[in-house]
Length: 255
Image (tube, rainbow, N blue to C red; front, side):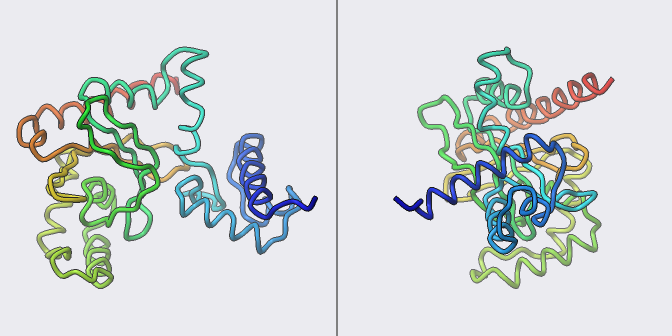
């Protein structure tokens, strides 16, 4: 019985991820195709789709692709079950349990932020968010923080491009105001959004510490507007404290 195309595609996705597990370094689509014996054209399409879904990202230094935190999430729960806590996702799970809110981690992809990880809060009314979703970079709290890593000139250019691609005038930003807002996030370490991504929703975010070779990530709590109004300072403190703890653990492990 001939192999079904969907089965073959799924097999290749797993083989690509296993390839990276063995290689433990970035690789180009051409290198992946050569190593696994795949056609170059279909390999390029496959890795682009995995990048679009947030499982791969372009390496920030030497080029090529490398796995993201979203891949790590797939097995972290098993690692913690077998070997105890101490991973990044464990720290995020502690934040989820402490606040009762949904925890997100995202990276910037052009004019958008893609959520790589979404851990739903334990509260009955916790916000439901899927991993892999794209959010406009100028409207997202994570987006404003990630744009703060760019120069004001680049932020202005990105904001104008985002406005040009936004069909709804109500969702466009006032560029000068937006540049000032992004500049403020560089100083205070946090940002929040209101009534976004839908009415009654909000988010509080901060940057996660840099990891060499990986795109910078942001951490956010997805909350309801009533929770933001009632507990804004506590939520800000929770995300900022978590990021600092992760940074401290990161420095300790590198010594």
